[in-house]
Image (cartoon, rainbow, N blue to C red; front, side):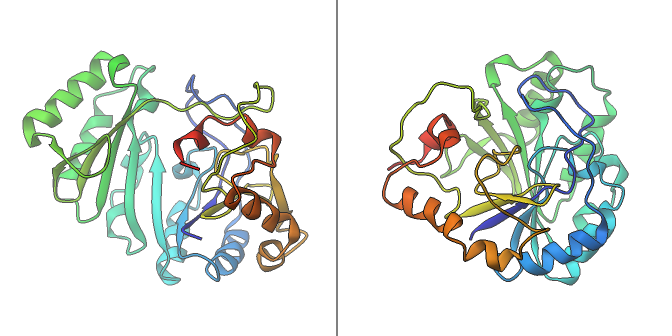
Length: 269
């Protein structure tokens, strides 16, 4: 697998209108995280620390980074950025490969200017790849537009080979995209034909230990096992997991939730 999503918490400090799922108050303890990471490392070295939730809310976040460092695992950290000020040494961790800051998360709230000051300090001499995410570019708040214009004036956005991605300087990128819709079991069926990177390239592990086939399934409708009941090895070798892979490889959608997901339409059959 290319990456595994480990939800260390489903709690969040924001209430973004595009996030349609109810946030929770679950936090994985450090011993459980250590156990999961050991199992994950057998199949994948690249990890994300979210499905729902804001990972920087975890009270043991620095310890989690130390664990990833010690296991020589690679982390892509996705955060709304509001708590980055608490981790001034974040970029010093060897595990961190990419930091994605979802600035669109603050589009509908009154944010203090210190938020942008923290980001400016991070990107000033960054030695790790940082991606600043702006979704719904035409609907940005005044402050976000102001900050985007400042970035453009200071660095000058340059095209890259990746769609919607622009380079500001070495290791610093701006990314634009339309907001996606979280799949909902109550939506209308789109199609039972198609494919996805779910299961094939990724799986997700929720805070309740449910293992599902992608990062857009916080309620684990496409559950392939539970780490409290089985090891990750047993889950990966199960018929339940393999049926999804076989389906996607044969251009067949076997899951009701997947049949209603618009995000998978980005992937060609």
